[in-house]
Image (cartoon, rainbow, N blue to C red; front, side):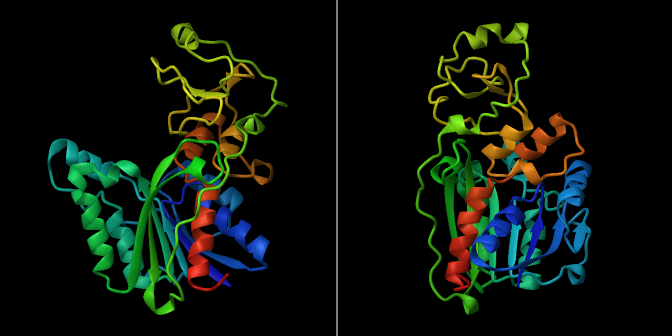
Length: 307
């Protein structure tokens, strides 16, 4: 039985990933905890998952209340680092959820952890924030630490989404070195279009000029990029963001929630949705890509010889 906990849980890409792994390898897992400060993400989690504990504000919980987990995953936000870099001030520890992530790691000593962030964290302030994070993790002196920027389209999903992944393997349980997954062939983006959705949206007056630049074979574009020429939009979707601006060109409409889910590696068919399309698109835009987390987990479990 694999025990997992997530922080900054969002719509629980790590749980979806582990569910897939367990199904394919005759394993089982127990969802020990999640944490979410967003009321909308919390509603989604309650509708679709069953963590033993659902924390609200992870900064206010006590260490003794955090249960043991074998796998810990968190997509802690980058904003405190970006803000400190912009205003040339120290990183505010009250806003820096990495402090709470490292508290979990030190408290429960999971066998395996994944921390996810935007790739700009690597270069912010000439890399000093990133190097400090790596130093803090290495100073725990119990883990082998690995890191890499991976684009979701490198692992099969046709979405250009660069993210930084930091992996920790507990040395006392490590049977072999962790290896980042090899690239996989990218799926055909046309298979991610929901052709059953025949709804249409009018092109806004403010977007008329923008659509003159859209190639005829484009599939998904982000209408937030006013002066773009949308190269490769027939091969992969742009990075899905918390600004729900994605347009499905062949269907002449906004991209649907189902398409957003597919482009993040989720199966939308078994989801209970009580939120508006707008809210769901924001949540999906803030999510990790299931396929990437799944491949990282598989290789982490291989390092521990669970697989």
